Image (cartoon, rainbow over all chains, first blue to last red; front, side, top):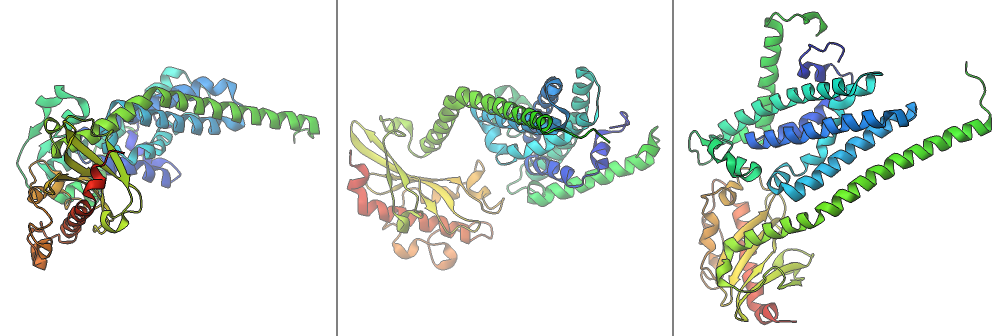
Amino acid sequence: MNAPTTPSLAITWQQPTFLLPLFCLCPLLAAANSLAMALGLSIVLCIATVSTMVLTFLIRPLIPNTLQTFAWLMISSAVIAILELLLHAWNYPLFRGLGLFLPLCVVACLLITRPQMQLEQSSLSTLAWRALKMNGGFTFAALILGTARELIGHGTLFYDAVAIFGNSWQSLSLTLFRSDMGFLLAVLAPGAFIGFGIGVAIYNWLWIHLPLKNHDNA
Amino acid sequence: MAKPEYPLQRLTRYSKVLVTVTMVASLAIAAIYLTWRVTNEHIEHNEHAWLEAQINTLVPATSRDNDLLADKISVVAPELLGTEIPVNIYRARRNGLPVAAVINCIAPDGYGGPIELLIAISYNGEVLGVHVLAHHETPGIGDAFELPGSHWLDSFKGRSLHKPEARGWNVRKDGGDFEQFTSATITPRAIIKAVQRALDYYQQHRDQVFATS
């Protein structure tokens, strides 16, 4: 968070608390077994983090310093609870798909909005922009993972997009090869971890081999 | 070091904290409550529509003229319907005459826990169709009854308590009449047995099932 040019995934791994990023992974790994689901999850998370940031920022002057963290926790969990209700009402397929992992998004939301707690003075737009950038990192990871797993496991892309996003997505739904069982491993939980591991490996390789300016910040 | 604090100062500091906590918490609760008020109807409607869509795949809407979801009874029969919790039975009627019953029962002995089923039985005791509503089986095993184009559950269509006879209500491996699927026997066995028990229940209680209270 001190080096704005550091890619977002790296920020995640620099956090002193180890458990938080792991919880953040939970919805990402579990729900991103298809491209449409990964996109849905990312959108939900993006709305959650940006509104948490904005609300926390607005309420900040009214709250004594010792209670800032409390207010922040309350706001983000309320935001997730509200989003869950809204999805249940207006996007039932996505709600069913995300299931248990929707409430778990609150941890991801806390993780992404955490840097704000450490910035004393900052404008609303900077904060929102930061939140968007971090979301970009999450979305990017979710989409890569979702694409790989759906492609390998089902041989399709966006096969459930029509149910989640409506009929206009029909044309995007691709079947690349027909598989009766698919390569199951990719859709299952182990596939998520293997895919994630490969992703981190590629990321680290790039990190070492590409000449990045902020290399010593890593 | 800070100046010593007088009791009154401490009290105001505490009450400030208390007031803030209460305010923030009640604002959050109010926001969630308001959202619930707004979305409540939609949510119920969604759940309703979803269940109705599932039932319609078993008992076509054209074969009945009653509001099936409203025309239901709840029964408790742990032995035959697999759960201590009251089980919903939806009744399909046409011109007031019974057409079919849809039993929302449980197969308690699935590999990963209970399997929630919808079993549609025609008035004369034939299975119209079986649908899996919820399960915790190993992912992939469920494909046999979840994926579009999977036909395993169709093998129940047209069956009844004596077609096959009691011995036949099992997977082929155990000398029964039903195929198992892709290396799984526990899951299909659980479903087959649950359907058989539901038919048994239906046979014993048909008049009660269709009775208008």
